[in-house]
Image 1 (cartoon, one colour):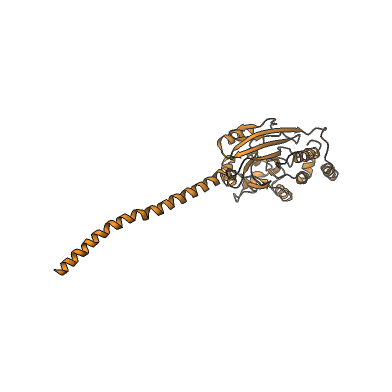
Image 2 (cartoon, chains in turn orange, brown):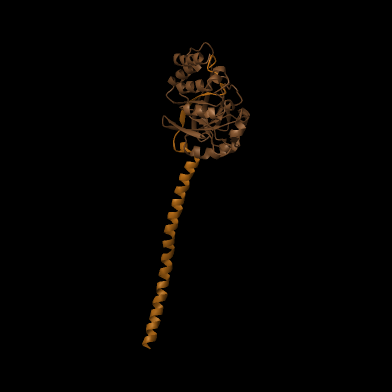
Length: 79
Length: 249
């Protein structure tokens, strides 16, 4: 009899512990998922800025280009 | 060259902005002194003027690949071409691009040559030419990533350059060569500005512009200076040309 009671008791403990386990699992899964999503977003932003070019990270740049073309060896007197 | 030097010096002293001096190719031969010196006088003058880069054109190969490679070693600026390769190796014979940092701005300069380079004497035996637009597409992304301003020195001619600007994103400025237009106003395709300064060294082009983002060039202002006798000779360059004239009478 005592063995049976003990067995029942053990069984009921097992039943009680199951909901606890199921309550904690989703929390443990959510945390890494959030980290992965955040990390992915950061990486995508970094890749995006590199694809768009260096000046996507800075303000407008002013410059001057002096240029020639097809000068064909003219050194004297033209040019 | 002596007049060009005077205008270049004035232009450099007229602004606090970063100034680049670029050539869109076919510079080394054509005139007597340049032919006789095999382009040496041109390279020496361009060194003295402080050119930052040029692209390789048909006339630059007129006296052979070996001669051009010798001139390239003498140049204190890179000769660029992203589509001229060795016939046997299929490896590029010149750097496809260069990056110049000035006033804290990274200028990426890509060079592309015209199909006519293959018609230079003996060229077809030693060089292979890759498709121009495909080559630009190949190198542009990696250059864009490393640059604040991307400039294409293109010998494809104005119409082809307009097409290129309309189909390939991320080029801020195209310096035209190969079709010899003199543009007193910039051609604008999307956010890309195209400039061209004529031929035979008769003019110097100047572009003042602002780049707000990749392929977003604004406030582009072009100035063309005619290098006529009213422009004073720069003494240093005049002496250099005179020296070569004596050496090759």
